[in-house]
Structures are given as C-alpha cells and as structure tokens.
Length: 545
Image (cartoon, rainbow, N blue to C red):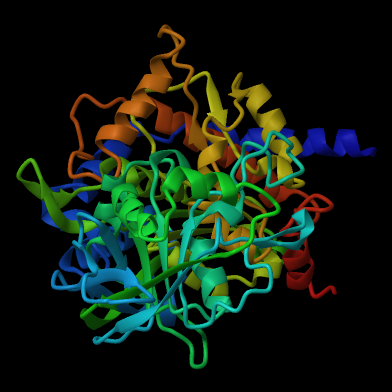
C-alpha cells in the first residue's frame, strides 16, 4: 500500500470514532465552566482553597467519566512542589547617578511604576548595582545576534525590552511572528545565565502585546515557582517598568525609550552602561506550596501500543484574588481557562465511552500554574505519566471565547510536525478553514502549556477558534477578540455569562478528537519536521543522538 492510501485508511479509521465524538456536549461544558469560574472558587489561585476545590472537582469528573487515575500512588493527583513568592507592598525601588552626589535618588512606586518578584525564594532581598541597557536581551547565534556583545553583566541590573528585532523575513526571528526569544520568560532566563543581579523589562503596549494593567494583575500577587534546584542561578528580582517609569530612569543618563528601542533593533547594537545605580529593597512573603496537576488515563486497545499515548492538556489555574477593579477582586478566569478545563473533562468522558478504544492510550492533564509561566506543564514534561519518547502528541486547550462555531480554526505550530497532513485533511472533512495565526506578533505558540511538551520534544500545539463567524460581518471576530483582550483578559470581568454559546467548543472538541484518534491508531510516532528547533529534543526522547 502506498503512503497516500495508508494515510487515507488512517483517516477512515478515525472516522469510525467520529460518531462517538459527536456525543460531545456543549451544555455539559457549560456546567463545568459555570462552576469552575464561580466566586466560590475564588479565582482558582495556586495553593489556595480555590485550587483544592477546582482540582477535586476535575478529578471527580474524570472518575465519573470512567477515566482511570494516572497521578501519584494510584490517585488522580500529581504532586507539584512549589514555592510561593509574593513581593510585599512595602517594596521600594530607586535610581541615582553612579557618580557625583547620590543624595537625590528618583523613587518608584510599587504597582504604579514597577512590579516583579524575586526568583531567589528568600524573604529578604536587596540589591544596589550598576544598570546596563542590553537591548532585547537576546543571544541568537543562528541569526548572528548578540545583545550582550561580550560585556560582563554579572551582578548588574539589566534594563531591556521584551519582544525581538522586527523583520518581515520569516528566516529572521520568524519574521512578523514572535519566537521564544521575544518572550519575557526567555529574557529572565538569559539574564540569569549571564549572572545578572536583577532585570527590568520596559513595558510598552506594542512590544508586549498588552497593556500594563495585564502585567500589573499578573505580577502583583503571589508567584508560584518550582523549587529552585541547588546551584541553579536565579535573579534577585525579575521586574517590569511602566513606560513612564522607564523614561525617568533613562532620562538620568540622557536617553529615552523610543531612542533606545530604535538602537535595540539594530544588529550593531552594543550594551549601554546607563551611569546609574538601581537600588531595590524587596521584602517577600515566602510559603511552601503543595500544588497538583490532575492526571487521568483511558487505556488503549492494542496490547503493544497502549504503552504509548496521545495527551490532552489544559490549565486549571487563574489569578485568584487580586487588586480590586470596579469593586471586584476575584479574577474568575471563565474564558481563561475554565473553558479549556470543561473541554478536557468532556473529551475524557467521550473518549472513555468509545465502544472500541483507539490503539494508543489517552492521557488527560489539567495542569497547575500556567499563569506563573507554564510551571505545571513544565513539571509534567519532566515527570510524564508515559515517557516522552512514547508520547505521540499533545493537543492543548486554552481560553475559548464561547460565542458559537466559526468557519475557521487556528492550529499554530501543527504545520511544524508530521501530524500536519492529518490536521489538514480533518479540517477538509469537517469543512473548516485553517486560518493563519491571527496575532503572530504576540508569540502565542510560546505562551501556553503545549510549549512545555514541545520544548521537551513532543509534537504539540493548541487548537484555537478562528474569527470567521457564520452570518456575521467580516470584522465581528476581530472585535470580539479586541473586546476580550482589552476589557477582560486577566481582569475580574472574565466571568461566566448565561447567554454564552458553547457550540464553538463542541466544534473544536470534535476536531481535536478526530486528529487524536487518527494519531492514536497510526503506524509509528509523529515527530517534528526537519530543521525544527524541537527536533533534537524529540530525537533525544527516542534515544537517538
């Protein structure tokens, strides 16, 4: 049988399972979203009463669905030991010229001018060090780019921009699409590798992709961190400046934000000593957290292949209780990500109810601490229920605006994997257009939990709803996204609404299950396409050099 016929047969076999997938119910999802985003769960903060209620609920729903426990010691729970670090409101920050009298420092206010947290996992954190501007803080040899240019920044305070040098060339930092080099997580990681004392990212809405209110709500509370391994370098402070605060800092050295952003976008950029010291006193509340992922499994039907699996992921956490906005301090996270959890539960129920199970097993993982930087999925990737070399695929679900089905869907990153023909043909069978990434400049591929598994080598991607709503104006979906991003994303107003239409989530669940069943039944395990950044990790997981 030639390859084309073999592929058609796999899709035909997947179609056998599609009938059962059609049992996916949006109304069941509605009840899950309504409960998980209720005030009772207090925003599902990590290490809170809301976590206990949310994870117990998800585990009970997995049990009721017929999915078996796949966590620690025969339970549904995978223990994720963490440290909670919360900067105290009394935190102080100032900047002063390095030479001459230093008795007239410029002071900055917590929340209004800066936010951040220590990575040292200590209660008393102080620093007073020379500040150096390092552009975008990127070292990318494949693009002949080095923002550090051999300058020793050990024990210095680094000031930099998020994002990356702009380009329309897809072979240079992904062109308009953001790569991992542009993410704030990378900035802090690279700075720590260089031995920096602290980092302050200059926030602008164009470079970050969102307003400072999103940064403030995300960074003003407790930061759940995986326990710091012995000997690993970490920043005394990982922070953000508002643009106005950054202007004050840079003005002391004769610079401004727009000027330095222009310099940072040049390959010829060299680090710029700012001639100032930045002093911080960051008292921090530290607590031990026993967080948990919720993990369930449906066994495959093939005696040999059931030791391999497809994985479905969604994060259960949100921001908990935070600064009040219009009198509301509960960040309910209805769209982000009670919706993804509801889909995970409903797909587990549907998969477990299949009269004939696919050959490979299915793992369903509701992960913790996504909002803190994908910490729960990072932990799962290091401690998987099935070895990564036997994990065929991860499909992730994160934040679905429940406004009904769309004619298009986004599967950013799927084309980088050998699963792409199945994704493409499934979309054709379901009369779905595969839309290009709507906001490539925001680097969404690197912002959700599939990235943790991709980074470890597993072919992974998220499925997202598109913007083409039947019977609606061409700009309808764009306006919905902008309204959510501007008014609800990481805000207390991300709350459940009775008039939501869950038909779009049904559609995505059908689509995901057809892809997953085809992969669960195919010969051989998927991988990344030649030259992809994650291919070496996949080869390593297979035991190859």
